[in-house]
Length: 76
Image (tube, rainbow, N blue to C red):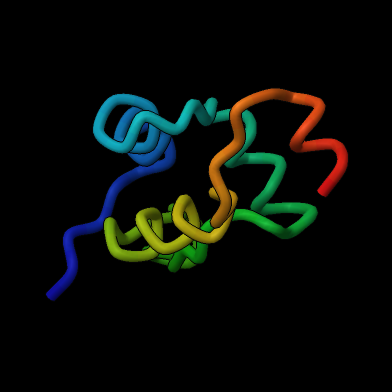
């Protein structure tokens, strides 16, 4: 069974463990408008995030290519 994190814990996990800065308020907004990590609800109200889903979401958002300057990024 997966370990689930509350939204504030998911934010801390992304920021401290993976190194991807993501505020709790950002996760709140993405849960409404879409584009955030997958989550389940406990008791119909409490959003919970699995570590696997957080890892997958962060990996999807990272570019596949490495850059040496910002001008190189805007040209691609």
